Image 1 (cartoon, rainbow, N blue to C red):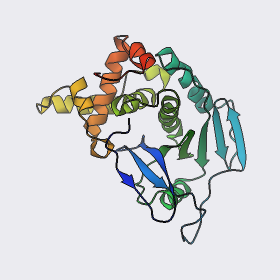
Image 2 (cartoon, rainbow, N blue to C red):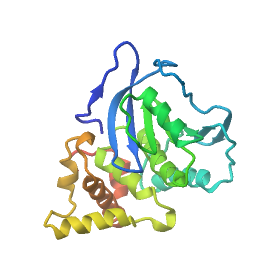
Image 3 (cartoon, rainbow, N blue to C red):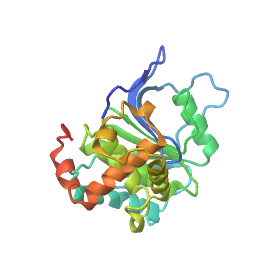
Image 4 (cartoon, rainbow, N blue to C red):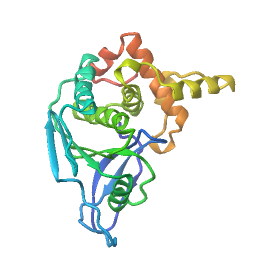
Length: 249
């Protein structure tokens, strides 16, 4: 997974984590220096939500407004673990901490304090050693963002060497509601447009040739989604995920 990833080092502090930002727009995955200091000199320090905690095994929600266990987004996020296990992902009970900010402004301020140069995105997944974390905020797109990011969490817990194309392809595939699995109008439109302009159709060679996350385009993400879709529909995904052997794939 972590091939040719850029590393940003912040002098004097920080520790390396794996960071996947996305759902809303162009997504990147890279190792970065995630600041562990409580302040970087900003006038207003934004801290992680902590007023309420909801344990919904294996998810742990942290928020400043109370989150009800019965909410569809909570149940959907839990079910995704079993959906991935049905596809061949090994079982894992590693907890995933989900931090829900009240507003987009608070989320972006926090992200920029901790991740200098953070772009305008709705959510990101971060991993520090064995700790898995999702950061996002309350919005109309929250269910979509949670589905996408917790897929990254489940995969990183159970399949640590998962390739970039498979990691992103599965997150893209399962970010939609269950009734829409296999559908992604934005990706389908982009792939159709690419075909009309003479670009080659999705293939394993194309997605495996992606140099690194920093070079990925929207078309790359669409191709990753398509390759995952075809493997699920052809019933070859189970062998791929369960074996954990991605050499020559």
